[in-house]
Amino acid sequence: MADVKILRMNPQTIKVACSNCNLRELCLPMGLSPEEIDRLDNVVANRRKIKRGTSLFRNGEKFSSLYAIRTGFFKTCVASEDGRDQVTGFQMAGEIIGLDGIVNDQHTCDAVALEDAEVCVMPFDRIEDLSREINGLQRHVHKIMSREIVREHGVMLLLGSMRAEERLAAFLLNLVQRLHARGFSQSELILRMTREEIGSYLGLKLETVSRTFSKFVEDGIVEVKQRHVRILDTDALSQIVNHQECH
Image (cartoon, rainbow, N blue to C red):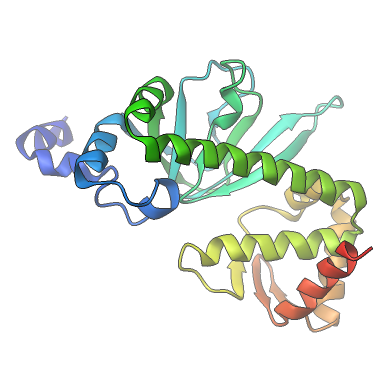
């Protein structure tokens, strides 16, 4: 309760939502005026902390909000017919999740925190209302939705035509590019997901993922120490993927 009193005494502490956020450029449209950002600050209802291994939302749950990830890493997954989790994506700080619920007003997957995380809760009805008044916001929401469609199309291509090496190379390149956009290294990353989860996402068995990582190490393309991966030869990874695209 003490926290609530502090917030009431000093309104500026509430304004940490968007205006002071270092991820603002990743999850919000560029070029908004201070007044428009102020209005967005008022739309962000609150922040939620999600413990590692727990769900932000579950398949079948009523859809009400989009979530901007402030810290942490998530996976989205659906239960397959045999009861196992099929991973459909990995999301990181600066990305928006919850878009799956827009179509039928209910979520179509589970979103599970892979580490302790914090999200900004953005009630969708309020985002819609504000989008009608701020054109930049409406375009941005459409862009995020379009990006999700393109991503899903990319995953379908990945699973439909790529060999194991090509799938893992594409996955690592995509991950490091997204992390680099957030100010992290272009060549080093810590995998927040297990190899089993990577396999589930790429449509590969656990042994195949491990074997492919080992081959990349032998070829001098990557260095692997448990979950820490260092890319030694980005060009080689790109060539593995581009070789597939040429056929």
